[in-house]
Length: 192
Image (cartoon, rainbow, N blue to C red):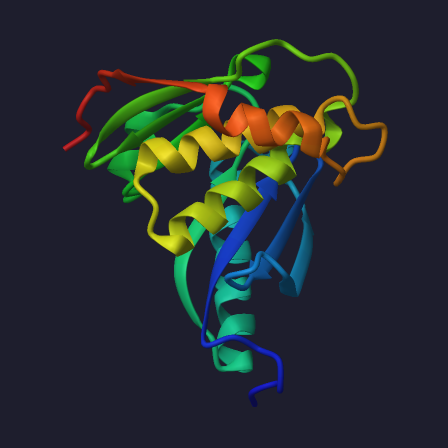
């Protein structure tokens, strides 16, 4: 059944933390209209974590269908060391790796890029992953090219770090960072 305010299309954003996962369905304005929380079964090994990620994405896809919305993209952020070649071999078309304060590395069928914030900021990095996922989802839904998507995600993520409250961002930093985050072409190993 379709809700009055549910959009026709959306993106899935999933932030995988060391102990828990937070997911949301986001419309074009990045407003959430569906949410999900699950535990991350990291003590059960990487296969259990991958299965839980897949289950969370499927559950969010079912939520979207219940609202009458079509999922256009899925963004997943994970902590720690990630093997992008293995993820691509498992079927991920594009992979974005967070390098913490050093920015993002995006590997896609169209190329590979590194987005680096113009400066290292100190503060509370708790909401930086959520900010990154939100910006990635918004950029992918809008159809922006990958370098622009990565630049905006690195800018919003960095601008969230100085804020005391997770979920906030410093607009005075974010707006100039949108043009000063450096994006350089890199070379990734082809998994195919």
